[in-house]
Length: 131
Image (cartoon, rainbow, N blue to C red; front, side, top):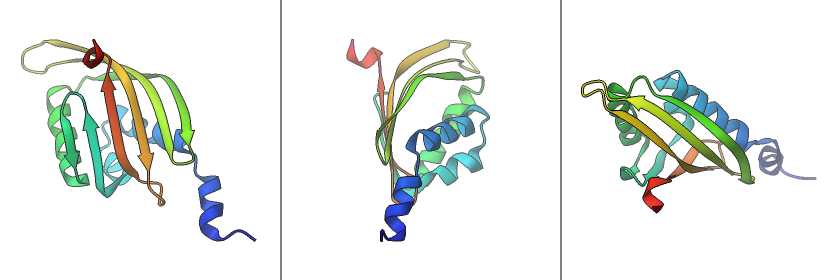
């Protein structure tokens, strides 16, 4: 008979967890975003480099959305990579609150979840970084 941890692994859906995380971002629910991350999570992005720790990640989210509060993002595709990893192809548009400069980005994101279902690692690759 399987133990409880293997049953939990089979019931975890990384795509659903990724969609939940993105939905929290879409409505700027910072409390819900924070709960998605493990305390020692890492966020690695072409645009900002590496951020380590949930508190630092949340500070970066708050700073970004203070400037780009009108962001509209869309997942063009979402897929499971493994039992604890999901991938998305995304596109976003936003306007800088002070300068009015438009931000148009697209790329790929791979999100790794730990055994408790919290985000352990986010890897963001912008399309422009590869050009």
